[in-house]
Length: 333
Image 1 (cartoon, rainbow, N blue to C red):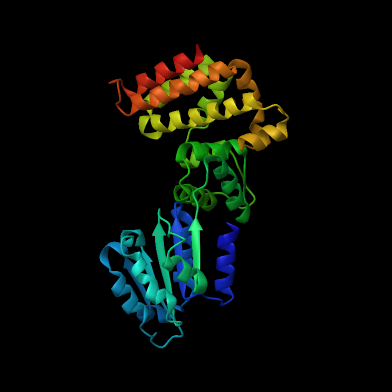
Image 2 (cartoon, rainbow, N blue to C red):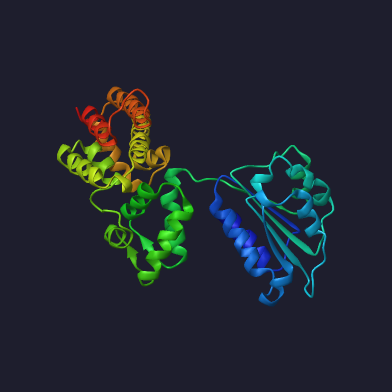
């Protein structure tokens, strides 16, 4: 996040690089930086003749270089953006001659999603020397709730921990999807609002009582009645509650619980640090540890792996609902 802020700040100050190579597993920040450059380098009147967007599947490296070597028309700079440049991965090193001697009046932006340049090769070294190479790393699941809080804080909103985790449990680690839902919320809710689970339920359609977060909590508490209620709700709303997501989240929980069992220092702050969670949620692991000793926890992880295979059609022909019911029965008994 700070890296992105620094890049934006430098561009705003007029410190513009001739090449921006934006790469990595998280497309959200790649798009943010690229869009900012498209929106802010040129005046609106200059964009018609001096801003060009290519797509990797439709263009060659030679065509990109040819366009980049042109001079701007009635403007100080031209901007060339290459989107989906990962489609050019086989020939991307052919960009080296241009990167070693770029046109200073051109701003070349390359969006290289889900891939990375080899830092040992000439292209990375050439761009690193005169331009900017930015690697956008995908956040781990336990980092996304904090990211949500930071984004909302920057827009003068706050969010309750449970509400943030509802978003993560429902949308996963896809920052673009989460950002779209946050935009909906801040369009509806006034500034300074503390976003609650009720806001999430009313405006995004995620049930505050029947979701993966609540299922994980109920399983940890061995609350059989609540678990069965959530299973029934999931069965009635399968598209909103895919089994693969449920298994993944339960697996993360029990893997963390296994780590908890192995800790010598079980103070709240040390547990939070070791598990990568906020101190607010440590009580959930303390409760679960009383119901699931280390041996049972390891057994549950094995059950989750088997269920994951079954959900993908390996060794079973059960419905998704039956797989989940069988899995949770074995976990709780």
